[in-house]
Image (tube, rainbow, N blue to C red; front, top):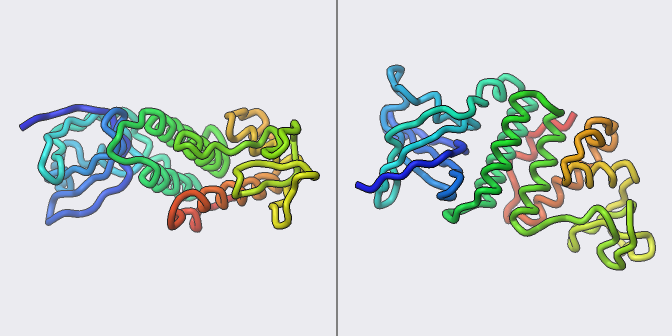
Length: 241
């Protein structure tokens, strides 16, 4: 039976029988994989804890007709415990893995894998506010998927920003002259924060106010819901403050 090995983030799990579990993972080089992890729910399992959501592991798989089988798992990043102990981090991580699952498939997506690993590591290490880590991840993940927003210049006339209106349908900010009816109005601080979240300018992000953080989160959430079919169920549970 053919085998392969890859790094993987565990996205979600389902119980199977009395002792087994089906794990859905995002691998670095093989895209999204669903596999059976046999016996992992037994207390004597050697790698059950390594196959929990938000964990990163080096996994060996046996190829199967419908589902692959996990034969080995070595921990790379044990982020689950730290994330689960912080409710804000947990809800943010849940939204991240749901987004990753929706944006990826069987094709290799190393950028999406590395982006998710970095975001989970940041949450576990408490490097920034969970809301900021989540919003930065969402904007970057959508960009990798081909839906990069523009927060630098007017998407219609290219007038340099910052600008005070965002149009969901065209994916970016617009100047006052180009602003259509119904555009979302944002303040300059929020516009600058959105640009910083996209580029990873953490000095700007960490210095932002609670008001601009909430405003930016609303824009990011709406932008995600616009592009991801059926929306993200986990976003409604995210703690933004």
